[in-house]
Length: 75
Image (cartoon, rainbow, N blue to C red; front, side, top):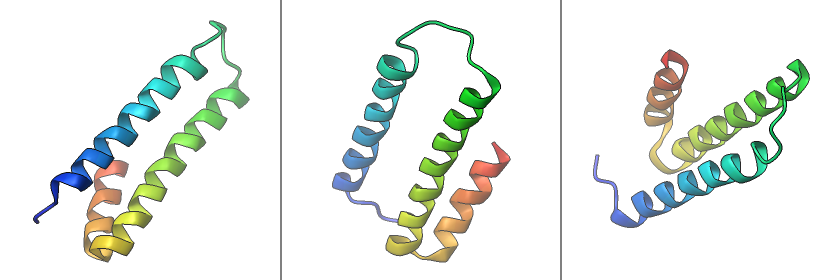
């Protein structure tokens, strides 16, 4: 698999943005999260992974998307 440097740069930039968003927005006000809030954030991050898998499906095909999804579920 030959991934262009631009794709890696975009992937890393988006990941950094997600981490900064998590640190600045999600943990902005220290509190004990409710079960509903924790479930909503978990669903949000799972949805991000599914969007990434969908992008892989479009760009690289079903095999790569299935491998990513299997690895994500395993972790």
